[in-house]
Image (cartoon, rainbow, N blue to C red; front, side, top):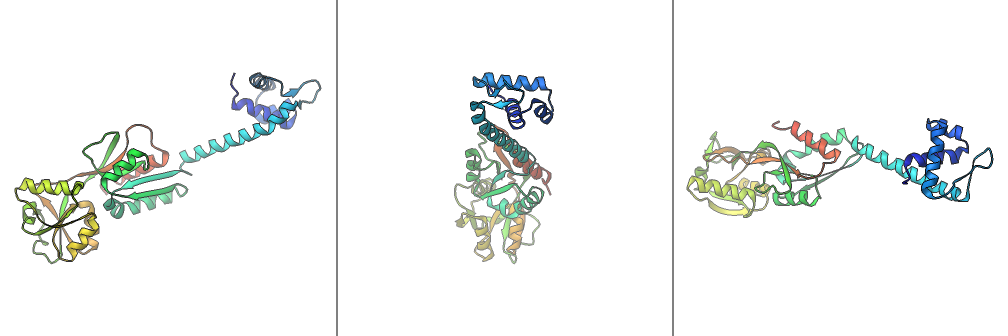
Length: 296
């Protein structure tokens, strides 16, 4: 027979009051039910915990040694239950997010600020890392949510789409093409092109677009951060192409961002999380916030 929390509460109440009547009133149960709980506990531990030879209950030596331990067990139990209740109520907890730098810089700060205002006791952890590392962080459990472009391989992951991020040409403000409403990828092939590093998703998409339009890019140099590419374009070293997610950042640099067509390249931006297992309450709440902000 296993010991239950109900039995421990019954024992502690009787041990502290030395009265079945007072203990039953404290626990809001009948005296017969209280007596049964004490007898079941004694059967579980293997011997009597109370002397029953006099009118007033007293603890046996074993009962005296067990009383302090039982109180500690109940205190730990109550604290554990309170802790998990507060986590489900978003009064405590931790939210770990991994996001590609472009999203972390251009979209995430106001969302995290709003989440913090609503749930100030939830600790926040953010990794702004490249797409491949975002996927690894979620798969490894370092982050519950990852914000990135849809990967080709979703093994072990689920994907919640947020928006399509059409590619834009990024040009110096005085460039002859900067006043156009739209551009073709072919319009960029005669210009020095600053690309993302090989192996990145952005590089694969740009190379596929140039290949589809039938003209290779005139590669000037490559960089590992879109922000670095923006600075190079600002200095007049060439042009580039980036997802629409980066348009606000490029505007801060004073650059022109023109939508690219023919071919249209619009990778899907979204949230990845492990496909097996439940999300924590903070992660569920933030995912819902991302969905509500979708398209805004």
